[in-house]
Length: 116
Image 1 (cartoon, rainbow, N blue to C red):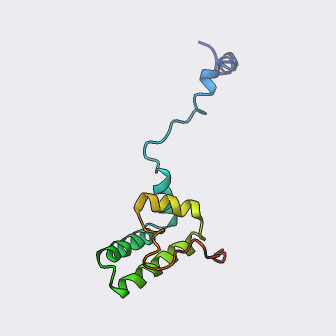
Image 2: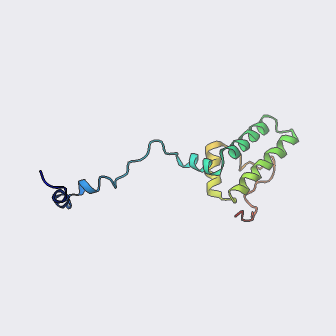
Image 3: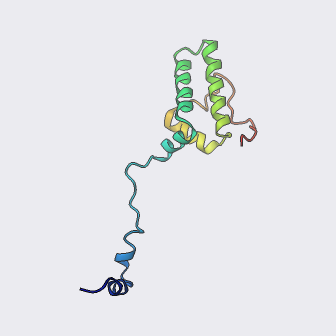
C-alpha cells in the first residue's frame, strides 16, 4: 500500500481522478428559462396579469375588467423595465396578452423610466 503522498503524485497526471469533480451534470430539478424568469419577476404578479387577462377575455365589454387588466399589464412592464425579450418569453409561456391592443394601447412603444 502506498502512502497518500505517493498515491497523490502517482495520480497527478491522470485526468479521470482530478477532473471527475469538475464535470457537472445538469440538474434535473433546475427550472427552465421561462419558469426561472417568471419566478425572478414574481409569480404573483404574473398570475395576477394572467387572471385579469382571462377575466377580460370572458367579458371584454366590461370597462372595469378592461382597466384592471391594463393596470396589471402596465405594472408588469414597469417591473421588468419594458425588457422586450423577457416579456416576450413570459408572454409566450403564459399567454398574458401583452401584444393585444384591443383593450388599451400596448406598452411596447413607451419609454419607461429606470426602476433601480
